[in-house]
Amino acid sequence: MPKGSDLLVAALENEGVDRIFGVPGEENLDVVESLRTCSIKLILTRHEQGAAFMAATYGRLTGKPGVCITTLGPGALNLTTGAAYAFLGAMPMVMLTGQKGIMSSRQARFQIVDVVTAFRPITKLSRQIVNASSIPTLVRDAFRIAMEERPGPVLLELPEDVAAEQSEEIAMVARHPIEIPIAHRAALDRAAEMILNAKRPLIMLGAAASRPRSTAGIGGFVRRTKIPYFNTQMGKGTVAGGSNLYMGTAALSERDYVHEAVDRADLIIAIGHDTVEKPPFIMGPNGPQVIHVSYTPANVELVYFPQCEVVGDVGPSLELLADRIEGRLHHAGALLSLREAILSRIGDRATEDRWPPTPQRIVHDVRKVIPEDGIVALDNGMYKIWFARNYRTYVANTLLLDNALATMGAGLPSAMMAAMLFPDRRVLAVCGDGGFMMNSQEMETAVRLKLNLVVLILEDSAYGMIRWKQAVDHFPDFGLTFGNPDFVKYAESYGAKGSRVESTGDLIPTLERAFKGGGVHLVVVPIDYTENTRVLIDELREKLKTVAEPAM
Ligand SMILES: Cc1ncc(C[n+]2csc(CCOP(=O)(O)OP(=O)(O)O)c2C)c(N)n1
Ligand SMILES: [Mg+2]
Image (cartoon, rainbow, N blue to C red; front, top):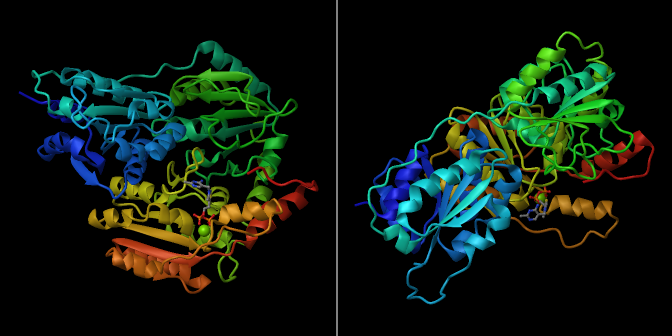
């Protein structure tokens, strides 16, 4: 007779789960025992947050839920940031948490937190399993909910007595393919008419454009219509950044060079925009009209209120839209004349030799050592704006950044997940000295898993982004600097390799050596952040001749 934990593991196998990340507690021991003899690999992490970031990134990169497991109370609560990361970032994930027995309570209230309620606001579904026989259906439901648009995290709590409960053999619920409906004909007709009437159209690719199922159809739409495009931070790569229609990335909300095109457009076709991202442009009463194309309807916001919506499976819907307008667009390339000026300003000073290197130089040098299909995963800090703005992408999901929760600490775990999924591609984590230290203990996990992974730490001995914002707001420099460990020795103490870049010209060779050497290799380089103010404040302000700072 199977017990509850056997049914849980069988249900996970039924979903095609191949690995589970986490830190078990005593309430999970039946599940751990059921896992021991099954096809699913249990990957221990050194903090539950790392497990959640890895599982969420699995969901982000595959479209299928990543799975993580923790104990009750303290372990479960350590998942909250990862849950919010997946919830805001629309990443499918299933979290399994333990709990004390619910049929009797021999430990009174020891360690008991109402986890199911605590997770309600940061999950699509949060439920306790109350008997073993319901496990196959609950697990099937959890995976469906996590995966369906808009994807996100689900939590199932399995109390230890339900995990140990003997049950009848219960059949699993078979999976079947689910097609997403295609946009309504009337919506496609209306959108086609707006595009045909536009004098200066522009496409914008947002976060949902990067869903694994979206990317092929979107590329086709851009190529067939030849309308120039820009992207949000999380929409990077959906259509090659090297294409001659790429106008730039909106890393700031307004007044950046790319906004010269945005401000002149009379129509923006926003594909997959999710307003969870920091706004890529600000809609106003006199600005361009907007067509929202996505899996789900637009959220109406102060800064985003599209006049037309094409809701449905994005790729096939765009194919039908392209059928209506291909070859009939007389002004498709109207804004292309701005392209060269925008991109050359963005690429300005990318090869400057200054020591320590500038963010522009670091982005430039990283691009040189990462092949087109290589993956760069960022943590959160000042450099994220520079990478979003300056790093060209050629393949979807090759610059993984979080412009949704924008949490620190996800850079290393998300890079580790990418390295697990794509062992043949170069994977680089780029972290600030602040964000890296928030989950640096996962270096041990990376070494244990024998990953090939390079971690680049940008050292300014500060929470640089906040320190910069403090200066922009004319506060005195106070309270945002810290000391660091010797990162080379720190890496070596984990059994990883470590290198310090000693001159600007040394960055590319050091990264090359790190990739060629294989294994886990930490590279630390100091960074000169004086460019933050020179470019992002002074230069952009000068460009517009208005005294205002970019909206961060
Ligand atoms: C978990 C978390 N805590 C705090 C913040 C606020 N925050 C955003 S960027 C930043 C500083 C990042 O410092 P570091 O990682 O060293 O990168 P730097 O900006 O110095 O390059 C802070 C504290 C955050 N986004 N996430
Ligand atoms: Mg820093």
